Length: 398
View: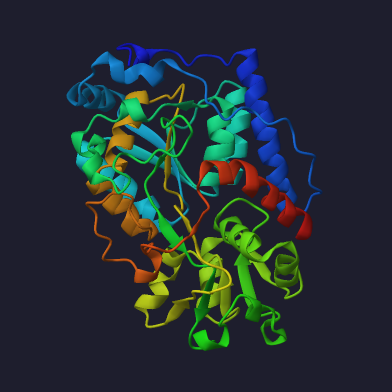
């Protein structure tokens, strides 16, 4: 990293970068609008998934030490991070980061799909408001990676406990982008398609995915909206792959599934029995209800195996950042044992690090050896199959 990078004025986008960003953002905005009820727009030209090389991609060659990076970050005094809307993450990440380094974190929590659409407009206007992002696979792989908005994370990793392969289940820091540089994945959790309120529905009442089509469940099922990127689309994608389009139409449309884009509302509906069956319910949002004595069951359905994913566990660095050094300190910390532990507890996700034992999680969330799961965060699946599936649900539920 250049020593004067932290004081440099943000660079203006070239005409090629503006075009690339506009194409990616337009396609993403079309999907978001389709999920809001507008007719789906024709797919725009696909941008190559190979992210452009940037000066920061070679930052690791500069020989900068961790102490020098930290000193420069403290001069900046602040980092701006977009992350999940979960109140636990909103509270814990800024507090623990400041406690550890004395650097303020401005945390912007919210729906990543909507945020990325806003981000595209800002960057096209030469505004660079975010330094680092914690997102799901949907915006990270098809939009952030292809738009030219990212600096490489890999050369920015300086802490030995982060770069040491023995601390990761994959044998090295787990980058999922084709170049293995830009998108660091922190979590790998089983995503149960169906969660039930056991006070109202027993597991034996739903032995298979087909049993969800029984008339007695009509109007009693809720789901995180699969027509917009997020956990709802991940679960719906797994059902689509396992059961097909006709099944999904019969389930989501024929069973009058209630849709939400609010993680808290989905958990609240399930807990209060408004809809005793939930599709794509974030398990971390059920914790307050479990603490109050309510019980839930995440079902294993033989005809629709569970998927694996990573929640908001994809870490990326934005280029032209206002606080580039603080952003690099942040990605080192969030990928460290301490950072992953804090974030895993806040989000209820299974760590990709091998030295963090998630004793606070339900056993159903931890992938089991020998079982094949649909990897909904795989790069090829996200940018190819999942895009087509999302278009199907946008048409179905418009």
